[in-house]
Image (cartoon, rainbow, N blue to C red; front, side, top):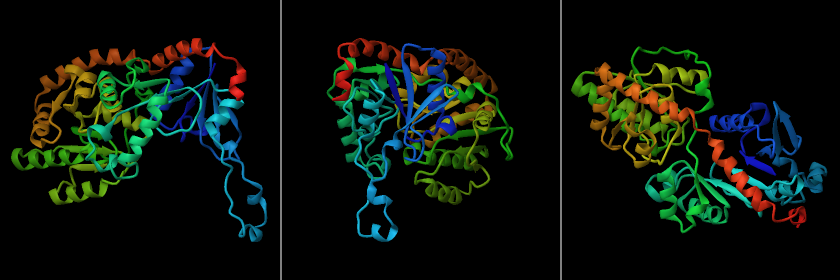
Length: 396
């Protein structure tokens, strides 16, 4: 069978747009699955080639199909009299017919129009669980838009992938679908964790905390700032926190709060970090604070655990399922609770060491996780289904 793995932003020359994609590519290659062909689909420019192969990875440029109409080729002067547009082409149906693609896999949630079987991945249902956050209700992708997409994609999906039992529970509580459609594939250790580390080109103190998260409201940076203010004012302790991640609309608010709390010397925005630099921050940190108020599972806690970086994390059910007794948990809106957990790592070398020893055991389990394993099981299962019809149906 031909399997199409879709990441709209990946480009062949980049070799992957995210650590998850890089990990998926690596796992597919290491699986040595010769029974099936895997194509990485992306949205490139229509002038780029349809097929590119790099290091054995095959890329299909869906933008290739969006050729300009004749009206767009006429002179600029005459063109003013016409309404120009790209042809209305369904890229997924088109590529499915051309190759053909027997099964699509969307490794993250999106909207797509297609008439062919697909595996749909759900990271979270934050708009259902935490509809009060602006990023899931009215900013960019609104609540109604999210609900429309999930209603459209979930029911028609051949299979649904989620990261843990809590994620499966959220799906079943939110949508009436057969439980048998849902498969659990835990997040893997990101590929950069296996690579080298390089010290970033900015001053780094001997003791610091680290929070890798984009600046969304639900990432709860404010709780960290309030904990820092409390530790300084009430305990006379001034730890440093490095913040990574791009601005999703809430960074200015956080900057203003840093100024208001006079924390400029304690909170450092790192800007963009290379994978090697990110690994360095993990391995040398006093601890990683993961203050997110949205689950059910996330990749940074896995990365921190694998790299033996103590984790302080919100007490969501999904996080507890993910990390068990290897992390320090705090109530997400309680900055004093967070501060108390930071103090443990700052003051007690014995407790910090004990936490790392627990992490080492869990890290061994994480290292055995292969995200692609469950997908491969689905592919083998679906191949029996696919065997019930011939190629004539592909071209209908």
